Image (cartoon, rainbow, N blue to C red; front, side, top):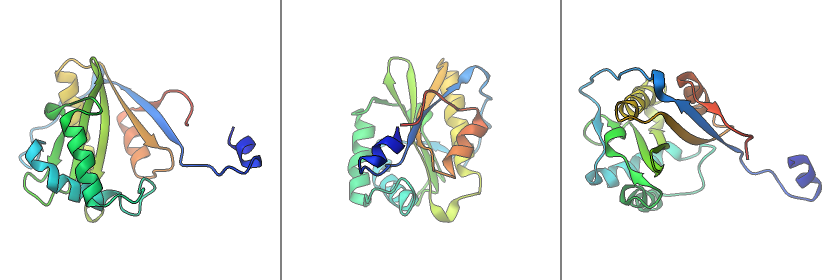
Length: 174
């Protein structure tokens, strides 16, 4: 597909894949005091985290903190599907946040991992892994059977994390 388009003068954009996880065997998350659920009051500090986490990555499309603030407002307001505060977590409990997961229900009983983000200075410390475990355990406890996500295939940090949890690609990358 891409070689044919390249012959026509088109350049390849980043490829994304949809991944799915069966939550039947999701382990219960350990109770940790430095993790808490996200609420609307976190929007400003989460936008700071998002701007820092996405800056200069494969998923950076030039958004600044203001753009991320607006995007988060849309997520929290349910524009992309019902925001799931009971399955969306951050650490530490007070700003500045190091890492966060945001879950939405984008169709009836269909959970979508909308964002996993970690501030660059806090990467490789297990924050995203712990929060994702909390989110998946919360989904399983709420009766969700599957969780979906979309990821950029060249994201060398995210893809191994998702695979380690058992997420598998469904369909070809687009």
